[in-house]
Length: 416
Image (cartoon, rainbow, N blue to C red; front, side, top):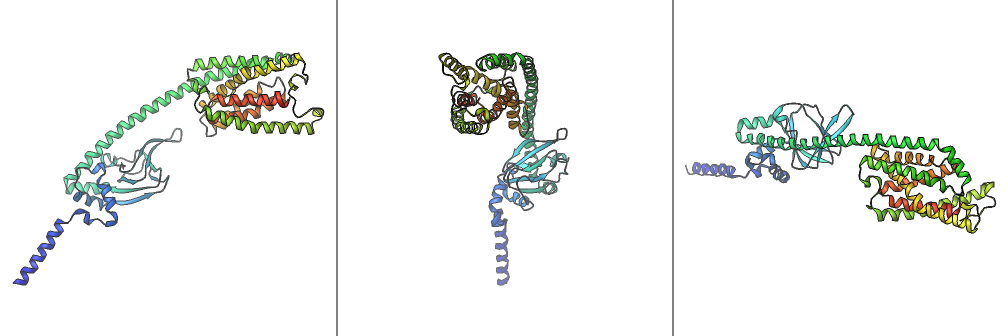
């Protein structure tokens, strides 16, 4: 009898210890930290750990590499997921334009795909990982079975409804933002139409006046007397464009943002470009017969190589006009007007390159009345200036660079 009582007592202690055992003790020690994070998921608040351990043991872990899809829009919904590590993007594809739109980003401790637990419909959007991610998968069938056994799991539905309401508000905000973007795009299309009208009108006026410009260029001491009125005309057209579009002046390069860095870069890059111009003049002296009697540096080449008082006056006036009027107006037209406008309208992957080339083609074309050589020579430095402008979107740096290049080319080296 004593042996039987002792056996019964040991059995009772063993059963009691199992009942008093903490739920965490049923978790593999390697997964204890994951279970603690699992318990802190908002979807499971108000559910005790001893209940959650049942659900946790029925989950399976999934790992996604960067860019891998968890599921696609239209897939059958059989489970939902909890993000334990990483972040994922919820996207929706527009079949009309074959483009994927980002709806929202799901971060750590948030859930994905739980909507199907309520409406039993296919996936309404696609989900892909932004970075390498780890998730826990919970089957809908598992939740349904647990709810049948214990009504405390009904609270999962309650929190899912709260999540859906929250995301609906986010969707409303995204919809409003999308509508605002469409309005902005419509405004840009209107502005682009105005820009095209002004540009085509300017080109037509210039083309009709080419004969008169060639005559003036031949009979005046400097081409600056011709380029100045042309620049001023296009400058007026550009000012009208700004007024009609009502866009902020910063959209056209009138800003001091990044000005110090732009000026510094422009100065040093222009010095390098000036070395190439000097090298070009040296090559011309070696290979062109017309340059046989010319020197490497010809500061008075612009006034036919003389240094008389009258020519010095012309030399000084043209230099002043170039620095204070022609250079700033040409940069405002080429970079502020043409390049900035094209940059706003285009959405191409290579739009920066396209805007630089197209704006400089239009600008160099305006110099054809002087000579084809001048037009070509203007084009390549224009590419350099366009690149400088694309880096900081301020006119200050390119104005300084333009002025330096012009002074070096025409008033020091005498390339023309």
